Image (cartoon, rainbow, N blue to C red; front, side, top):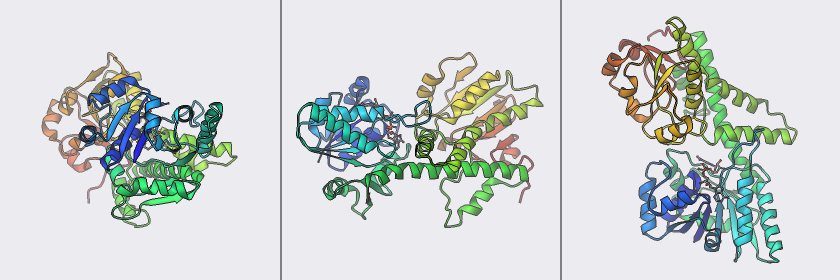
Length: 448
Ligand code: NAD
C-alpha cells in the first residue's frame, strides 16, 4: 500500500520505517525542513537502536521517502497517518492544535478518497474533531471527496521501538465501519504472520485505551515508589519486596522498579491530560492525582538524600557530584521531562558542582541545560567520577551495570554513591568502600 505519515518524530519516523520494512511504500512528511533535508542525506535525527540501518535500507529500496511538501505527501497515500506532537497546555490538558493543523492540511490537499488514521495520543473526541476539520476544508473547496477517520494509538517504547513496532503485543484500531476496519487489517497483515494481534473497537474506546494503558503503567511506578519509601523507613529492602510480589502471576514483574520518578514525552503529559479530561466530564480522579503527585515528589527524593548526607559533611554547597546518565531511560537520547533535569536544577541551586556523563543523550541535554559555570561535560563515567565527592546514577544504561569500581573509588574525593535505579548490591558497594544510598533500601541493611 502507499502510505503517508504526517510528523516524522519518534513515532512517525519509526512507524513509517517499519511499514516500509514490511513492504509498503511510505512518504514521511514533516514541517521541519531541516529534519527532512537531513533525512534525505541519511542523517537520522534521533537515536534508536537499529533505526539508522533500516532507514537507509528502505530508502535505497525506494520504499521510504521524506518530504516537507504537503501537496505531494497527501497525494501519495491512500492511508494517511497523523503522528504529530500532543503536548500539555499550561493547565495540563492535551494540546491537539498540531493534530488539527495536520487534519486541515489533509482537507486542503486531498485529491482522492483517503483514510486518515490518528496515531498521536489524543483525548476522546479528537477523531470527531479531525472529521469536522477535514469536512469543512472540503466544503470550502466545494469538493465531494469521501474520507474516513480511524484511531490507531501507538504503544512503542523508546529504546525498543523497532522491536515494538515490528512485533507489537497488540494493534488497537478504532473504526466506525467494517470497510475501514478491513483496510487496517490489510495494512497490518505483514505484522500478523504468527497470530492476529488486531483488536478492533469503536473510536472513542481506542482513544481512551492509550491513556488507560499509560495511566496503569504510571500507577505501578508511583505505587512502587511509595512502597519503597515505606520499606526504607520500616527496615525492609524494596528489591526483595519487588521480587516477592512480582512472582505473583496476577501482579508480574514488569514496571515494578522504584526509582527517581517517571519521565519522558508520554507518561507525565498523558496522566495530566487524563486528569483534565476526567475533570471536564465531572469525574473525580483521586487515584490519578496521587500518581502524578507521588511522581513529582519522587523526582526530588535523591536530591533530599544528598542534602541529608552532606549536611554532616560541611553541606552540599561546592561539593562535586558526578551524574551518570541523563536521558529519561536507557537506549534513548530523549531528554523530554527527564527526572535528571529536576535533580540537576536543584543541585545547581544548592551550589553543587556537577560532572555530567551520558552515553548518548549529552547533545540533547546540553541544548536544554545550556552552559553553567558549575556544569562540566565529561567523556565517560570515570572522567565524571574524578575528584567527585559523590556519584549519582540516574539512568540505568547497560554499560553502568558492571563497572570496575576500584579505580573509580580511588579517583574520587569522597565516598558517596547515590543509586537512583537500584542497580547495585548494597553489601558489595559497601565492601568496595562506598557509602551506598539507594531507593527504598535502609541504610543499615541486615545481610542474609
Ligand atoms: P516528536 O516531537 O518526536 O515528533 C513530532 C514531529 O511532528 C516533529 O518532527 C514535528 O516537527 C512534526 N510536526 C509538528 N506539527 C506538524 C504538522 N502540522 N505537520 C507535520 N509535521 C508536524 O513526537 P513523538 O514523540 O513522535 O510523538 C508524537 C505523538 O505520538 C504524540 O501524541 C505522543 O504522545 C505519541 N506517542 C509517543 C511515543 C514516544 O515514545 N515518543 C509513544 C507512543 C505515542
